[in-house]
Figure (cartoon, rainbow, N blue to C red):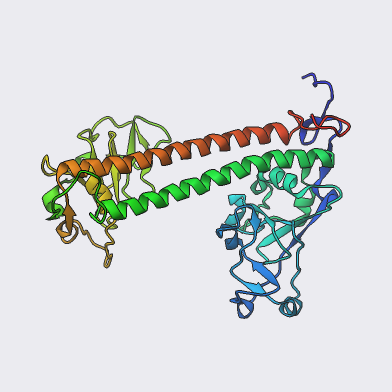
Length: 400
């Protein structure tokens, strides 16, 4: 294959002629963390956060590690012999299954890390941390794992990892472009979270009658769930094979967080009498379903309205506010759950409330779709910018 003018073939693929393909050890070094004995843990303030792998999940640590569950003093650090890694080191898991989660974070302050993590400390004269962070995010470090009983990465492997290294001005330009998209994604995430909070607040007010929509008056009636809904056993709709497909004609559902477990091509025993609520008899989790489906097990109750004066979506939303105390492992719907009493308005007010909440759901879905499209755009940008296919800086250092 003939190369495009101005490009060269390297061990990292085809890159611009003015870029380098370097082993990682030439732009920084990798060093593992330190043991963190239990007696030194538990402090919430100190000179250094002492990060564990689990801290990468903390709110506020999405890109930069800023929030730790444990802190230590300089004196404790010396006693432990723990390394204090500089700000802007890139850290990730080096032992166990956490490697395959491919999480890479940037230290937002001088920090210690435990011995299940390693740090990539960069030579700032050769590498921009934001560029290198994006480049590492595009790589699967799990592919480097040593073939031992316990998955592990070692510094020699990591140091030999080839990296595409543009001139520093271009690294910074690429990092800025990707950071701008990250800022947009962060803004969308915050807006989605805000809208979800607004919907939750609206549910608390509208579904309980604390706030009434304009034009509606009259007392709400107390009714048991069994007066509002009837149930159907799922036996005829249970999927025969537990080997689910990634695609198929019919989704296989559960009422818990997973919801769609997979798909099946079985064309018998498909539930079509929609919409319904599927209810997990053991956990009391529920899902509103308006598409044909099969179910996983007999632990599901299929709930429908018992009369024409009930809006199913209203009851579903109201059920989501119920804080049901789970005790022993048993079926709850018939024995307890269906006897729960709910304040219920007339059908027209149920429908109006449901419409308000549905409109809020639609806005959240639109924002989620916009966020997902933006994520796709960022992925495409990374493919172009981190390989030099698209240049932001022309050879010689000026902006493209």
